[in-house]
Amino acid sequence: MIISIRTQASSEERGQLMALLCRITGSQRPFTPTYIDGHEVIALDGNQCDEQARLLLTQQRAVERLTPIKTPYKLVSRAFLSDDSRMVVGDALGGTAVTISQAAPVIMAGPCAVENRAQLLETAQAVKAAGAQVLRGGAYKPRTSPYQFQGLGIEGLRLLAEARELTGLPIITEVMEPELVGTVAQYADILQIGSRNMQNFPLLLAAGRDAARRPVMLKRGLAATIDEWLLAAEYIVAAGNPHVILCERGIRSFDPQTRNVLDLACVPLLHELTYLPVIVDPSHATGRRELVPAMSRSAIAAGAEGLILEVHPDPNSALCDGRQSITAEQLAKIVYDTRLLAQMMAGDKKLSYVA
Ligand code: PEP
Ligand code: MN
Image (cartoon, rainbow, N blue to C red; front, side, top):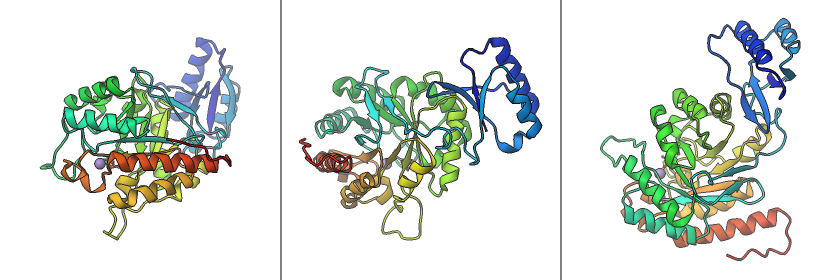
């Protein structure tokens, strides 16, 4: 159930509501409402709230209305908000604003890892020239082996900020620890929570509570179900940050031919279940650069709001994920194809897109 709070509710009325919520749920912690689409809301699980509790809630002066939601996730549910989200990202730190919506796919691209200044700045300029709108690059890298390149850390963040200054491209980069959310948010326009951390609950809460409320791109866990993924998104939203983007990056399966299996059916399915935008990552999903263009087109055809792609000036010498990294020339072709495709899908018969 979702409780919508009246805009004009006094602080006393709010205080009464919060006290009642603590009594109903047995919680010691005060509830933090989230602002979604101009409404201040709090969600409760059905089994936290019997008929009598519901009656008490409806009698509260601070309560505007109660919306019953059957799914385990509430605030991210399509049953709560029927409109697709239209998220403007990237202009808080001097970058060029980008709108994430179904109208035109957003292309995020850049190296798996920030390796050094020359590599990043060269890639950033090439990514911009290719027509992508957001620069990706890992400063903190979750590597399977402790002996692999772990990223440049804070120095990587500084280089990303320099690349934004140079190109105007907003930055997306991964944060792995709750304690670093504030620091990464000082540099990044979008926080990435990686696959391996999809259910790192302290990290989800920290990204939800951070004062900067940076948009968070939540990648699907290696073997996460859709419900687990949406509940992870719910953690961030319930903690106070409604700006969540989902990213399908492939799930584990039995065949080592591809790194993962790209679950494209999840794109239209998620659009039924939630209003959150869905970005597809064909690089990590396939692990093979020759498959990336076809899977990029397929993702857009499936209705994704955008792509995130790994690009490197010399993929074969990349310190991380070179096998799945494409060149800037390949990126330019993908940008062209996907924009044309999106235009066609929007019903524009003229197909006038020119790079
Ligand atoms: C990445 O984006 O570089 C990354 C590590 O992705 P994932 O969490 O999907 O493996
Ligand atoms: Mn990578």
